[in-house]
Length: 321
Image (cartoon, rainbow, N blue to C red; front, side, top):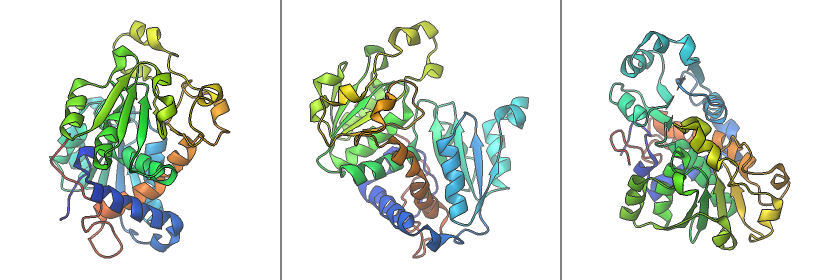
C-alpha cells in the first residue's frame, strides 16, 4: 500500500520504521549508489520557523539522491508576509515541486497543507505537535547504540511543548519500551499525549528528579527548555537551568548510557559531556541525512526495487495522533 504524506509518528508501524531504518543503513553504507536516482526531482523547503539541521539535512538528502530544492525563504521575504494563507501558499508551491517539506508554528499545519495538494507533504515540525522525520533519525541512532527492544529510556526537559518528544514517545510504543518522563511540574507531558500513549499500551512513569531513574536507563533523551514557546517569560525564568547534566552527573549512570539531544542545546548538556562515550547527539544529527534520504525515497519513489515506496516508508495522508 502506498501512502502520500508523513504527518505524525503515530502513522508509523514497527514494520514501516524498520524498513526506513534498514534502507537508511544501506544508503549510509553506499550513498553513491543512488546519486542520480531523483535527477529531475525538486523538493520545496517551506520553513515558517528557523531551522538548521532539519532544513539542511533535507536539502542534503535530496541532493545526494540527485535532486534539488526550491526554498520559500523566510516568512518576511515571502507572500506570507502579505497575508497569504497556508492553503494558497502550498497550492502554488505544488506547481513548482515534487514534494513539500513544511515547518510551521501552528500544530496541525502539515495536516492542513496535505489536504490541499497532491504532492507528498513531510511535517518538519508543527508547533508543539509532531516532528516525525526527527523521530526516525532518533530511532536510527537508538538502534545503533542500544537496540530498539527491551529498552529503558528517559526523556527529560520540555515535555509540554517538545514536538520531538511527542513523536518519539508515540513511535516507541511500537517497541514496548519502558519510558520515564523527567520534567518540572509545569512542563509535564500533555494529558492528551499521555492518553494516546496509554491507549497504545505504553509503560510510562513521570519524575521531577533525574536521579530517581538515571541508573536504570539505556538512553537519556534531553531536550531544550524552549523559551520561545512560553506565553509568560516569568514562567520560563522560574525553571530555566534546572534540568542540566554534566560529566559528574553521568558518573551515577550506567557505563553504556547513551545521551541524545535533538539540538540545538543551550545549557542543558554541559560541554564536558561531549568527550564522553555517552554523547551521541552529534552523530544523531548526522544520521538525519541517510534517514531522510530513505524517507524521501519512499515518498517520492515509484515503488520499484530501489525505493522504500512500495510500502516501506509507510505514511498516511489522513491520520494524525
